Image (cartoon, rainbow, N blue to C red; front, side, top):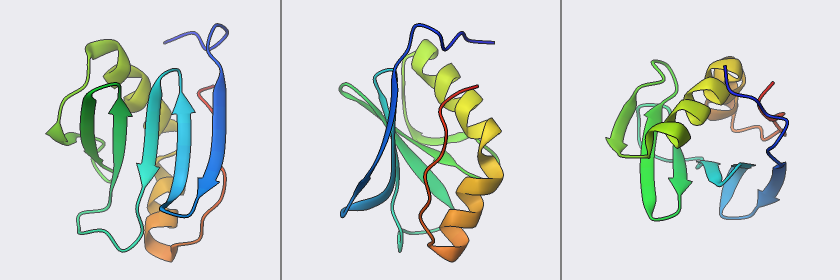
Length: 98
């Protein structure tokens, strides 16, 4: 399990995408009206990846190992909420890693 005590987290709303979480230096984005399967985007510096919400597998791109582990741990904690947001297109804030 990764420690979150040394990391700062911020969740904000942006008109271009519905969910934005800054997790260490990872940015998590959920675009409504995007193509199937239900997925979210993770950006870490020059790295970009797309994760399937239902399987939590990276389906496109790449991230450094540490960044990928943090994204996977966070998304596992919020998988149901991410899927509900994708389905309903009802944005709400999500907490950081626990």
